[in-house]
Length: 129
Image (cartoon, rainbow, N blue to C red; front, side):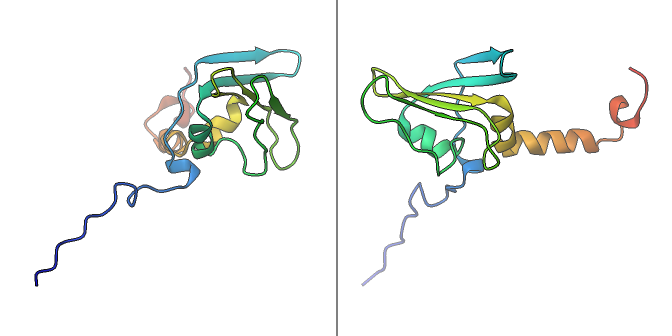
């Protein structure tokens, strides 16, 4: 009897951490001078938003009824603006502070860290622009 090699699942190599989740693409930018927020707007299925890791686990999601929504005021656990709204199509609209998105983007953080560590850049060396 010959043993057949086991195939690894396509999902086995994928990490489930928020930083490794597939990035969402914002559909627009929202600015509020009144509350001092610049936010990204996403419209995605609920599963994609959950997998992105942008919405903290302790935040509830709106009911399945179109038009229902949840707004999260800034506090010490999550000091950023966040709003979820259920659309007629069943998808969710996520409006989230741009600072929270950039903090959750591991690739972007790595890029910025490497950029700032490069002593050949005039802004890093303190040369006049």
